[in-house]
Length: 477
Image 1 (cartoon, helix red, strand yellow):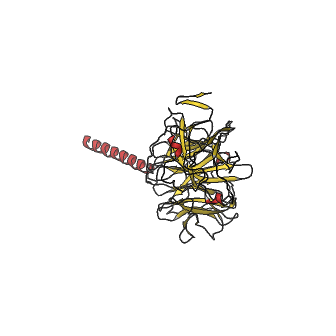
Image 2 (cartoon, helix red, strand yellow):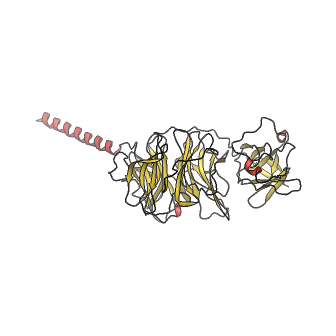
């Protein structure tokens, strides 16, 4: 009897352990290969998930589907949130960042989910709206941060923080709007930069290091095309994203540009296919996952798309009236390079060298048949001029500027007349050293192999009324 009782107890214990292992295995099932996207309520919702998304009236949630089981309902991942969007998968395929708010009147914050267990933790807890997160190769998290109390006209700057949401660092310093950021395999951040002037809206792709240094133009289309989706780097070295046609969100196309020549390789991948694309994600096969509808009266559906044949393929998901946005696929990815940082917060300035201000892009040369030679530059701050600096005989200049302060540069002729419009707003990070070929030059142009005359002298302090800079403080006249 004792033996039977002992045997019964042992078998019962093994059964309990077995069931526990079974249920634990089920709850820890891998989501590799699952398609995750934002589902926005309202078939004709104008929301595109980009800048201004935190003000949207429509509710949105993040769901997952099995692309091999079209008829299976989508799995709701953010049921405990009033609204959620912008999912991004970690490089190891284990976790997902997203922006969300628990209740309607909350600000948007960054959250992280462990995909195998659905365990969620809050990353940021700021008074402003935190949107469009991205994992960085150095372990930090990138996102856009907006404040309703923005008295400095700082737009929508980019910030980084550690995985716990602490050690907040700003990395962009002008009044542009930065959003829909991703990370290239070379370790740089690729982000949409949008400027709004009195007469036009301009959007372009900017690239920079994760510390905000070396920020430069990556791609800009003509003024009739507006960027409408996060850019992704495909397996064949192209950058894929969506642009509107003639500034209208109702007619969109999928665009491809080459990583090697982004300014001169524009290709429309959906020529001849009428309709509206909301989101695109490149697959390792070379095909694309796209959110598409043929017209305003149609529903958004998730398809495979063949860019080579320019044709819709397999229907992956058919929804009941939701807008499908922010498509990603769960799985391991190649971890981008971890770039070293030259930023030294103990240094209060950065250095800027230009080889020749009279080197111009052919587009600028064509604007004037009688373009005068520039002999000086004027550095413009947010509210006033920071000084006029004569250039060397070879057109070069060498400046030392207060770090993390936005500025523009315009060229002047011998009579002090402005020769062209100022460049885009720039900034230098502490201890950053930057160089450029000329003013409004072709951004794919490399400098001549010569030493500019300007570097033979000490750099000119900007603002020019600064007579001495001690890197821990600034002395004025």
